[in-house]
Length: 333
Image (tube, rainbow, N blue to C red):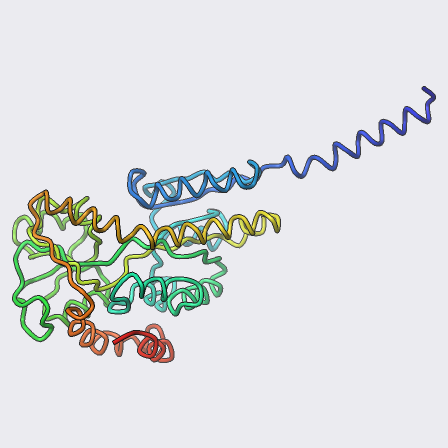
C-alpha cells in the first residue's frame, strides 16, 4: 500500500467518525415536578421520560425530580424562564401573571366533554394559556388534567344544589380570589387557612370543610377527617407541562417533533384517565366511610349559572374583558 492510498483511507475513516459523533451525542434534561412519586401525575411523567428516551434512540435523556425536589412551583417557573430547569409539571401562579387565572377559572366545564373542548389545542383555555406563556419566554406543552375540584366537608350543607340558600358552613380556601368568590356564589362563608393546618382545623371545628381538591386529593389527604364529598365540578384541577426555550433549542428538529407528540399524548391521556381515577377514588372514599355525591349537568345548571355571573364579571380586570366575553360565548348553558 503506497502512502497516497494510506492517507486516503485515513481521511475516509476520519470523515466517518466525525459524521457519526452528532448522532451519538446525548442531551440530558431535568424535569421538575411537585407531586409525590406514587401519585398518578408522577407516574405519567415517568412514562413520558421513558417514551422520549425510546423514540429518540437514547439521544434525549430526561431525569425526573418529583415532590418539589428542585423547589416549589413558584421557583420552578422562575427557573423555567431562566432556562436553569428544562421541563416542569406545575400549576401556573398568578404572581407571574394575573391572567394565568384562566387556567383555574370556575364554572367553565360541566363534564369531561367540555374539558376536551376547552383544554386541548384550539380550545379557549388552552390557547389563552399558550399566549400567556409565550410572553414569559416559556413553552407551553399542554395540560395535565387531574379532575374536577369538589367540596370535602365535615358537616352536611343545607340544600347543596341551591346557590341561593345559606349553607351555614365555614369553608377553607387558599389565598385564591376565584375560589373565594366561587364559594360565596354558592352561599358558603369562607376562611383562609394554611394547607399545613387544614386537617387539624377541620378536626377541631375551626372550619367545616375545604375547596381545592379532586376526589384523589380528598382521599389521599383528608379521608379520615371529612364526612362528605361533593363532586360539583366547580373548576378543573389542571397543572401544566412546560419547557424552557433554552431546553427546546437544544433539541434537533426531529427530536422536537417527538417530544411535542409525547407531550400531546400525555395531555390527552390525563383527560381520558382523570374521570376513571376520580371514580376510583370516590369509591375508595365510600369504603372509608365518606358520603360521596355526584351530579349530572342539569342538576349543576343553577350553580353554574349563578357562579358565572358572580365570579366571571369580577375577572375583567384580571384576565381581561375580552377573554371574559369569550368565556360567556364559548360555554354551554
